[in-house]
Amino acid sequence: MPTQNRQVRLGARPVGLPTPQDWQHTTEDVPEPGDGQFLVRTEYVSLDPAMRGWMNDARSYIRPVRIGEIMRAGALGRVIASNHDGFAVGDHVTGTFGVQEYAVSDGLGVIRADPALAPLPTYLGVLGLTGLTAYFGLLDVGKPREGDTVVVSGAAGAVGSVVGQIAKHVGARVIGIAGGPEKCGLLTEEFGFDAAIDYRSDDVRAALREHAPDGVDVYFDNVGGDILDHVLARLRLGARVVLCGAISQYNATERPSGPANYLSLLVNRASMTGMLVFDYEERYPEGVSQLAEWLAAGVVTAREHVVDGTIDEFPEVLLKLFAGENTGKLLLRIADR
Image 1 (cartoon, rainbow, N blue to C red):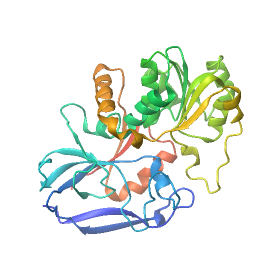
Image 2 (image 1 turned 180 degrees about the vertical axis):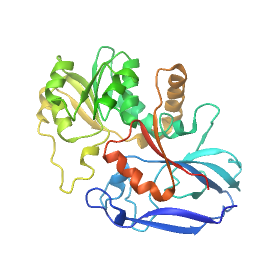
Image 3 (image 1 turned 30 degrees about the vertical axis):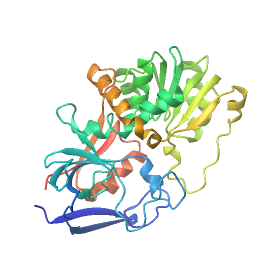
């Protein structure tokens, strides 16, 4: 049985991009599970744009991570000790275990992962909250119909890549916005998007006119900022805008301004709706079942960007998200100890 547990804690509220000074690296004794609990050894840590918002001391859909608290994170691991009737030693599980090598859980919110059905990282990606965000955000909020034009920003990321694939499956024309020729090529060649726009080198407004000459029916927004404004200017009558994230704004040091083209919503009798996957918790089994079926049938391709390292490297790997270095789901795989 291991004796030491490495952890990463929030040391200060970041201003702009998190820096090494914003983190505390601590070591504690590995906790022992009590009655009705089990001990998990972390194998993968999920890195998500929402983490940046959790570091701010601001009212949101979830309380902020407190100073000195283990950084909140979804993770996947293996049960190595158990006093819980529902979880046995050897089970692989996902849950909000935090950025640490070992975690004790009572099973609340924990889901089993079966490596015989899908590779373990997939349970933090397509078969995890990432895939469920895409599934419910697109189908329940965006409501795409056959023949619709769907635009996705952050399209090569964990959520955006799944959104585009589902949209194609329901018969929509899909345009992805991503950064760099490699990611744009991936959208059309691997994920099956009809067109890709490189926001780093293309004139996004002109490219939208070219690829969506009749306008946009559904926009799934993961980035906010100028790109949101450009797409708002191209909405069709009755369009639906899904606000899932705004990664371009998360490290802004000034309060971001609202979209300048918001009156397009009025003119086009369109809607703009925020979505959080946690609102669909009762329907998670439905979503996972459908995504697993699509994954097995090749309708959806899982792509993970896995970085090997230690728990201490979490702060460095997190910055890859905001530099746009990841393609698909970003994960930190914890080295064997």
